[in-house]
Structures are given as structure tokens and as C-alpha cells.
Image 1 (tube, helix red, strand yellow):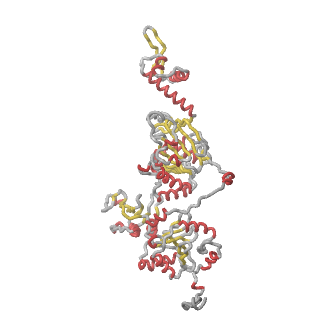
Image 2 (cartoon, rainbow, N blue to C red):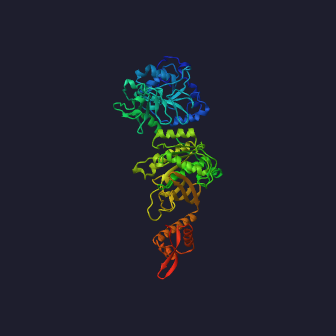
Length: 619
């Protein structure tokens, strides 16, 4: 420092003496950072230690959106609102108060051109203490979170999977927010939001960006808003008993309501971006020593058949009783009775069956026949629930609905029948392993999050009419790509022989296996009765016994066919020769059983001058 370089020369006199009031209210939070006890500023003291890690996970998973002019304008207004407002660059978020946001929307919403709906139940009695934090979204929007998971808020707020109460600020609302803001109630059975008055539904639709004009006499009718499968808005207006034949111009006329589809989205773009963002994932690592020392036990729900926690594939050819056998499995799980009358089940466990192909009437008849065979009551078994609704793996609302159902009913096993109705795929992607695997994983991830074992009922490929058509199925027979790779255990069903329509008797193969090491093959004979006389009689046999029975059945039929060619009777030797049956002890035993059953009767056979002992087919 010298006269030449003008070291320490006063450049500009001070204009103000700083005091504590000029420091940000969270200045003490920086002490931990500058003393290197923390790498980032602690966010608000209301966030207790137990929520610090969940908060860090939430903040680190957010997409960083640079602040634009609208963001800065909102921050500036909140800073002068009288409520504590702090920008925390360490986490790229804003701390403030929900009452400040509500007042800003009410008092300066039009001036700033703020979008959407914002409500809070907070009275703002402590303006110096922030009660929320906000992450910026695109186009001046914000995602607002209350401090600490599980906090109650206005109806327009929701809770995510981790329990954080949140909503949006300065964003176009989605259907949920717009509907709840107008006092609608969500329909838990059919979906959508029900309004006492159609005029309120019109206001909610307008908040979404859709102007709807209704005749004055319909404004007091009950109405519903819901999402179409493609995300567009549907409005329904209920008719009174006097209006069943009344038509409404431009609306689809139903017997009990008017319906119209509008080209306005029910989910906003920022929600899609948030939903599809990559979440931060930590890969868990264990050492070889830990792997050696840890105990990894396999828990069977049904010993040697079904393992807990591993996705199961129940696959079979057309009309091979896949659904019926699956119902038997569900009953065994829920009631703790033997599966197929043979495989002892463990403790009864809650089970849910979602079946969208057979229809509830057929399912009920089949279930009652199986219940009767197992000695349990259908009406009394509250551990087993049913639905004919199959959630779509391609629909986030459907996956959310599945998550809520599993959370409410708490089944240990979920059966989806058939999988192609729940996991639809384009024809061009049926052979795409990656596309199929992604859809299968979506459903399974929802189940894993709830500790539920997933079982998918699926088809096998059609087999040629020769060769292996009646041999046991293998995992590679599963239709479409991805299923064989996805399955960690399986029940594969195939036919031993062609089914004879009207008999109700099925000769099947059952192949059971899994990566846990269980593996077995069974002959499975089922007599399901005939329409009007439904029953469920099951016989399991070893593969050797099944093949012997199959062969015996084939010889038996050939003998009867051969005898029918000689209406006047023929000797046993000629009948067996015609049947191309080897005259060994087994064949003679089958022939004798046909005689004992009265299907073949004794008949004298005259040949030239001699008379021989013979047989003919009973009339």
C-alpha cells in the first residue's frame, strides 16, 4: 500500500450503518455452514431432525428451474408482504408463509396476472415464522410444500407418497384442484368429482380453461367432471325422472344423464414434467462378508408352489381353466385351505382378485363350486376381495388408484386376470422386451411398495397340432416378450389331450417352478361339471401316472372305435388288431374293464362252420 497504488483509499463514503434488522432472519442458520458443521443451510427450525433426511431427498430430487421475471416479481411482492420471506440458494427454494401467498393471490392476482387457485387454512398469526417452502416451476409457477410431512391443509392440497402436503401456486389447476376448490366430492367407485350443482362444475371447468354454457334450468342439477383416458375433460349432468327423453343440443344423450367431451387437459404440463423427472437413487451396497453372514430366508405362502414377494406368472393356453385354477389359488391363500386339494397352504392371508375377462357372474359360480369343494363359505370369507376393474399400466391415475386400493385393503397377494387387459401394448411392441418390461415393472413397483406379491394370469403361444401340442408347457411358451424374463415363479397349464365339449372334464398338465428352487410337474384332471350343475373335482397325479392314464385312455377309445366297426360282433383278437393295440397284459386289462362296465357285451360270432366267443359294442 503506497501513494502510487492508493491502497486502502476510500472509494465511496458509507450511506447507511447496518444493524441486525438489515440481516436476513435466518442469518444464524449460516453459522453451521461457515463453521463446516453442515454443507448446506438448515431449512427453517420447524423442520425437526427426523425430517431432515426426507427433506434433503426431496430437495435433491427436484429439477432445477432458473428464476424468471415472474418468479422474481413474486419474490419481491412476498418480501414486502410483512411475512418472513427468504430465498435459500443452497436448496434453490423460497421460504415464506401460505397466508402471504393467499393474500398475494387475492390482492394482486389480477395486477400480476397470476394463474390458478390457491387456498390455505392457516390464519397467518405468526408472520415472522415461515410455514412453507417453494420450488420454482416453469413459466413463473411454484410447487409449495408445508413444513413437516402430514400437515393438514385446505382441500386443494394433496399429499405425496412420502406424506409431504403440497400444492401449486401461479399454475393452471388440474381437475382435482379445480373440483375441490368448488366443493366437489371425489367418487371413490366410479372416479371423477361430483358437484351438487352443475353451475359449480361449470366454474371448475372454466378454471381449467373450458368455457361451458348451460341452460339456466340445468344449473341446479347434480353434475360430474372426470378425465377421459387420453386426459381430456368429460362433463356429465344427471337427468331427473321427467327428463329421460329430453335432449340437450351438442351433448350425448344417455338414459339418465347428458355427457360431453371437451378438448381441455385435466392434467397440466408442469405436472407431467414433475412426474416424469428422474428421481435420485442410491444403490445399496453390501460386502461379500455381509452377504456370507446375512440370513436370506424364502417364505412360502403355499409350500413348493408360491413364494412371498416374487412376481408370479400363471400362464396357459385358451380354455385351459386358467381363471378357475387361479380362483382355487386365491381361495387357498385367503382361507388357508389346500390349493387344488393337494398343496397345503400356510396361514390365511388377504388376497385381491381383479378379473376383467370372465365377468363377475361366472367368477361367482366358479368360486362357489370351489368353496363348496373346500368346505368353506363364500359369504363368510372377508379376507378375499374381487373386482372386474383392471388398472392400466399406462395410466398414472389408474396406478394411483391401485396404490390407494392396496393401501386400504392391504392384501398380501394381488392377482390380475388377464394381464393383457391391464398391460396393453401396441402390436408392434409385443415382441419388444424393453417396452414390455417397462410396463410390467410399473405394476410390480406399485405392489412392491405395499409389500404385495403380484400374480399375472397370461396366455401361452398356440402350439402346432402335432408334436408337442399335448406336452407340458415351459416358461418359453409364454406369449409376448418380457413375461418369461419378468416371472420369478410360475404355474404353467397345458392340455394332455383335446377337450371334449359338454363333458366338463379336463386332462391337464401343471408345471410349477420358481427361482427360489421349487419345481414340480403334475397331471391335473378336473371335472368342473356342466352348466347348471357346476362342481369342482380335482385329481393330481405324477407325470408317469398321468402319461399311463393318457395312454390307457387312448387305447380304451381305440378299442371302442374298433368294436363299433363290427355291429354283429367280433373276436377279441380281431378287435385288438383293428384297434392297433398290442395284446399285452395292460391292453387285456383295459379290454376287460370295458366288458365289466357294460360298454362291450358278449356276442357269439359265427365264422364259416364254427362259432366263436366274441364281443360287440353295447347299443
